[in-house]
Image (cartoon, rainbow, N blue to C red; front, side):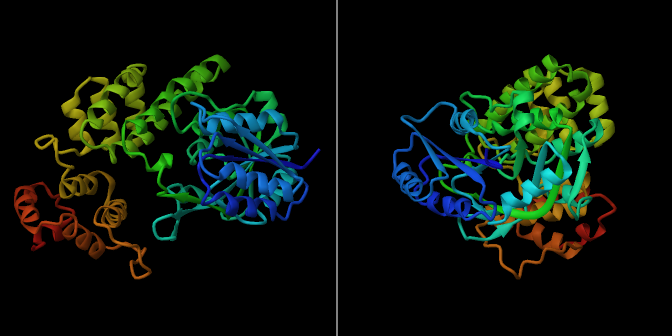
Length: 424
């Protein structure tokens, strides 16, 4: 029986699969089995997998004849059905993995007698090859060194708020079998969310490894995370999957507030990307979700999170108020065909999120929306001057900024007097 079964999932990634399999076959932990599941690729991915299998007896290819509706979930589940290792790990077939990754996770898990081991990772931008930290970076601040946590309701809540991706974790086989862990299969994306909830809540101990051991490719054509149409809304289908599982396992009362927190987190992310008719679709998808929560649940959420954007959006959804929802989201209701005013959006966040978070958001907008490359010269430290520069650059047309700024001067909070003096 191998120490670790590594399940590699693949679909139409002929440009990347060889690099990924090279990373996996060169792992310093040699006692592994490598299960490579191709989900009916139409390119040369299956042949590349066969070629690697012919050279390395540890590779077990599973080549599905057609692409499945379940996508990654179907492929990952197929790998889990045949895995024999003491631990199970996953790898996306277009990502990169440090040669010591699985040995590091395996040692951390075995030494701590943990059900789960989890490392940090980096995002690899396909467009320019740059590396950046994922959104969860601050959550690692309490764990600068390898740490073992006994999972109680309080510590589970901490881990639930990490990004749910499975390919930087190891799962003890006993946990997988005891909890019946499988990815939900359906016509949706982000199936790692229910899997993450089930694993964390059923696990008894987790080993946290602060090393950045893998690079996850983003901005690749055809990738789920690059999706900006109605498919992005399918993430909210997982609310009911998680809720039903929590209810059936007897955990719903204990983790209901955490599930609402999850909805708010996904809503914040999706609403920032929604354009055009997707906005109304987002509202319509979420109304029945939020209807499952009482006013007391929203009040508890506000007590923890404040009266900002997320709380206001949730309240508008509860009231079935689309206009109020759009206003809370920062969308420009007067010009539904246009993207929202970035200046107004920035001022909204300045009032509700504070200077540092607004400046960080604004820099990201400049890079993404204005097509700028992130260079070393772009400082990561944030200051008032950063925010002023970012606000000036938010719109391409200076005359639009002048007109809008004149209308908004009276709205700027007194705590930011420099904004009142800003000349454009």
